[in-house]
Image (cartoon, rainbow, N blue to C red; front, side, top):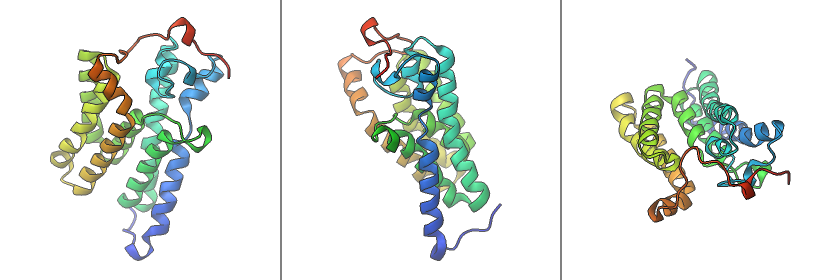
Length: 215
């Protein structure tokens, strides 16, 4: 475990971790994988999102699974690398940077994903019991309702509620809450569709006119 960084010298480390996490998080695995597989631009179908749920609408479960793992992995990797070299404060900065990078990648004009898999991966890296609990909530809600967005919204709310009894660390509680706020902001449109009963369910394939095509 690295020695704690004095706050007098912490800001360069924190800003560097935030930037490094952002660059790692901004890798658009969903877009890259679907293009490499000859499926075109995943942003042209379904929700227009680059995440695993929208990749699933191409009909390629293998690509969706790979996107899920890689998007989660980049959040976990950012947090674990930050913690290994510099400690918990840098870990949190790097993890949050990864989620920001996924949501607002500079390479895609700041139009990225909604941060569900990356947030869960980050929580697994920061405090694995909390991350595991969030995974279980997401799976339960998704299995019952078939709404990925509703599962993500409820799982994100559960994260700070579980963080205190599982970690006794106020910083982890605050971090989990910050991720939840960001995720809810990114799901504004989904919330509206859920209220109107117009949200698409997990596994729905894109309509013919929405099939991927090269830009």
